[in-house]
Amino acid sequence: MSVWKKMSPTLQEEYGEEYRQKIVNNWNAALDRIGSTNINYVVDNYFHAITARFPRLRYQCGWDAILIWSPASYMPTPIQDWFLNLFVRGKRPIPAIIEKGGLCEKKTN
Image 1 (cartoon, one colour):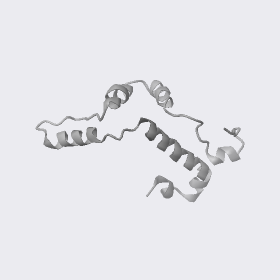
Image 2 (spheres, rainbow, N blue to C red):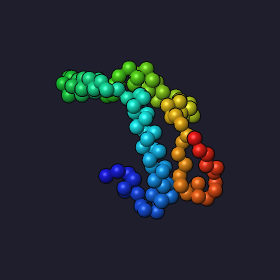
Image 3 (cartoon, rainbow, N blue to C red):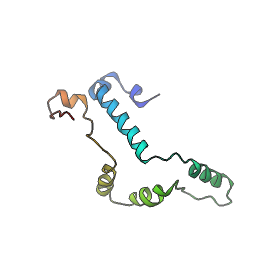
Image 4 (cartoon, rainbow, N blue to C red):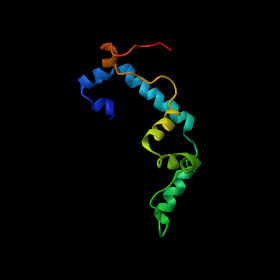
């Protein structure tokens, strides 16, 4: 069951269907941009983990994990946020309750 379906109807209304759909679209677009179709990294790491006499504590799947995501995890939080924002393209969605309350100006793309 999705997180959205577990939320109360009141909370769903506060965020709104448009917000949910934009989050889903942004997530899928990010996976399409940076995701890999090569599952060999994962399979090889699982195989090593279950067959090695001394398995590693952590496994990194792919060069992006080795060169980007693991080093980024050691950065201070504000730098991590800036770095991750590089991967978020487009306007961030705004919850419906904020738009209804007039707390922000809704802009059209």
